[in-house]
Length: 148
Image (cartoon, rainbow, N blue to C red; front, side, top):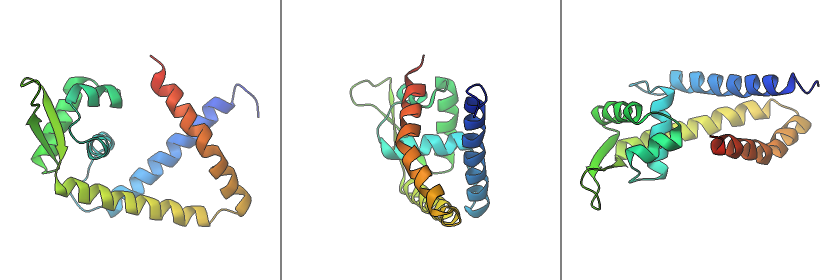
């Protein structure tokens, strides 16, 4: 494959897979429907309870006011609690509710089931190629995270 075409095709393939997974899961999940950024923030808060808004914004590469808007939306839906940080009364800590943990657990289970079903449709060599690519894709993600 040409070196100039490869990066674009890789990016298109990754975006396509992510988009299709998200669309399939969105159809299967109960209401309310959550947007991609809302799910990303929920995942982050469930994985790192107590994270602050500015730290979440940095991690998600979003503006602080965008994360605040997402926090307000997810709070109204009963998925996040904003709590005053004990060390700095001006700062907020984000905590998931039991409903958030249950919803994210269900989302992760359905995502794994979907990908497992689709992987089963690939031949053994294709499955092995994808498994071998995981460490490289994680390294690529780390590089992207570190780039200013």
